[in-house]
Amino acid sequence: MVWQDFVISIVNVVFMVALVPQIYSGFKLKKGTVLIATSLPTCIGLYVMAVTYYTLQLYYSSFVTVSGGILWMIFVIQRVMYKTG
Image (tube, rainbow, N blue to C red; front, side, top):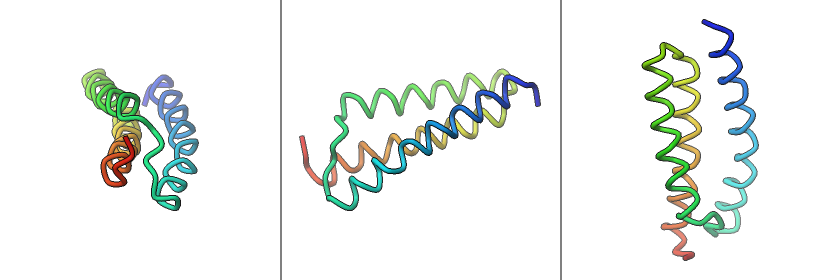
């Protein structure tokens, strides 16, 4: 593991932890408060970044970035599921 892989992974984990309260709130209030115009491009962009990290052999960063993409996909699902927007 190179130091860049470690740093990118840690930063992505911090970003993911910051998303958890918003995801929890969405399910608790039954509202999709994050716009699809925000959540879908972010989700797709994170998946593209994950593939890029993988090709650079930054495997931990790739895994963590896919996990972040999954969290952003939850925002898309909440928006569709609760039909807000």
